[in-house]
Image (cartoon, rainbow, N blue to C red; front, side):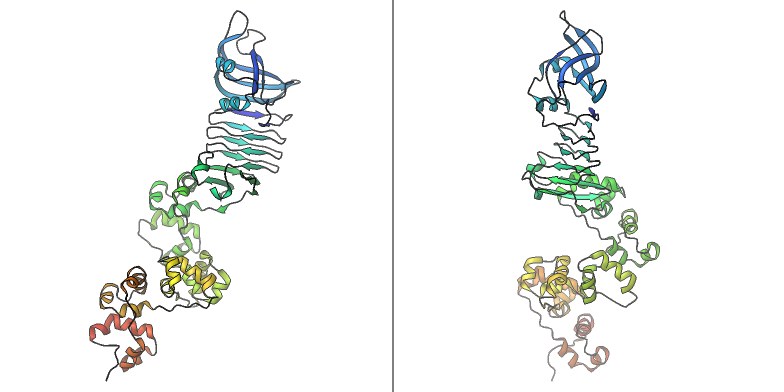
Length: 461
């Protein structure tokens, strides 16, 4: 690991063609651990430079023949301006490996491992090379170019910019615990950049020259772990491990990230008694206990919100807000979920083609668009089940299963809804007394009892 620490007098600017280049390496004396040379890390020839190391041996002309360089420092007027430590470079590599004008090759040779670079208080322009590097930019308006490794860049004070290879669309930006992670998603970006972590960086610049603020979507590592059973087994409630896994694997694998902790809490009254409405505690509970107990998320906040105009206006598609409302107000107000997203989808051919059996997308569509377009739920899954004896036997009065069957099979099989709940009620006075005009109750009765009792929805008489 090479450590580079800049002083206060000269900025580090890796664009300078004289930076990290040299013409020669000679020793002014035959002391065992000291030499001078024309190597200019900062590109300023007026700076004196000293090499440090061990095992130096010299030829008859006083030139170094053997030895290992462990570091060097630049100084001017007796003040250190830059120090490099952690090298293990044979003298022969310094003598023959690089020459004047080959700055990029010299830097790549020096900084090929996992390195730490600490900038000056001035405006630095630096880059990382191979390895997983740490760039501490310090004060000043700095610019940093990450390398192919997984780098950490701490911008410090000032207006700092990180330059990424590729286009903005080739990266996913996520933020957690004060860190912004840049995750390359395409093969071309991944070939040039690792998954980098940025702290105190204000701007991102891409190959096109596009500048954008260094912000990303908020990432919840525990929710990510909870959404992936194998990660529960691997990491438990270790948030840092979950964040690292997502950076290096999960994002590119397309893993789900959104375990709904508030909906999990709303699904279990006992958890509400013990945890209140602490969503993070609920997610941790699921990881530590709930998953092993086979607890499920049965409450759908989008469907709950879609059941009430005031909630749609207040919360839109904010799932957590909907679930919290149900726990803090809705239950006491007697609110229940009435919106059936699969039935909504089954009501419209365009929605069937767009959403299939995706309940969340269907509910979100209704909240954001469908209600404003005058769309309503036209398909009745209980009537659909009641229309087919095999579905009565298979699903009972499970309307979600009925709607799902229609979307996946029934529409292709040409199945129709033929059950007439109004006529079924009209046929039987006892059902009118029991259910009034409740057509859902009538269909449910037929599925559970009436079909076995020989009752019919055909016109009697």
